[in-house]
Image (cartoon, rainbow, N blue to C red; front, side, top):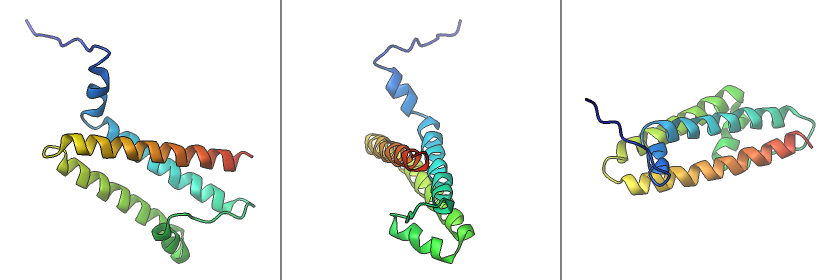
Length: 115
């Protein structure tokens, strides 16, 4: 008979942060930021990219912007995933921090887009 572990309220955040869910959420937030930035740049508003690295790629063109965003995001997530077995608490904190930052950025972009 298989033993099924029951999730309690206190173990739910731990279960949520283990595995690929935080990585997928961070990738989703990053890609949402990418599309929202593109929409804002094509709008009538005078919007500039706040990230200096991404601003440089925008000067080259949209394709370089998209490839740089995707490369930096996937590269960063890959590094975090490789570090997770050795420093799980640090990686968890970095993931939570980045999710919070991206959530704030996306929320701000939504406000700018729909005002």
